[in-house]
Length: 103
Image (tube, rainbow, N blue to C red; front, top):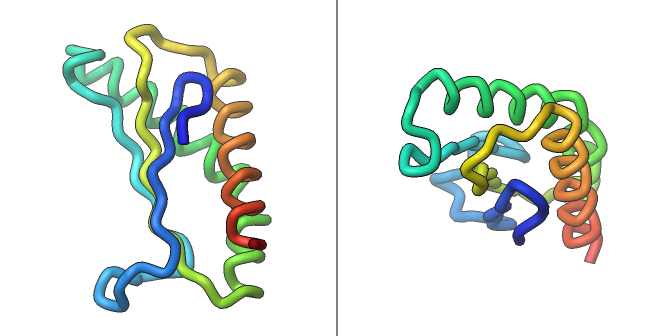
C-alpha cells in the first residue's frame, strides 16, 4: 500500500521459519533516490522513531488475534520530508494494517 512518502509491503501469517516475533519490521531508503548514506540514515532514523512511538496498538491487536506480521516500509520520494510528515504517514499505515488484521 502506498501512503504519502512511504510504501508498505506486508505479509500476515508468514511461514513459521520466518517468524521471530508477532511483528517484524524493516526500513529501507533506496540508494538511487538518495545517493549519500548520511541522507539515507537520517530518513531511516526518522522512520524508526515514528514507528517506535506508534507500534503498541498494532502489536496488542496481533497478540489478541494470535497473528504474525512481517512489514517492510520503503521511503519513495527523492526529497527529505520532515519528521511530522513521516510520522503522520506511518500512523496512517499502521491504522490500515490494524483494520486489515481485524478482518
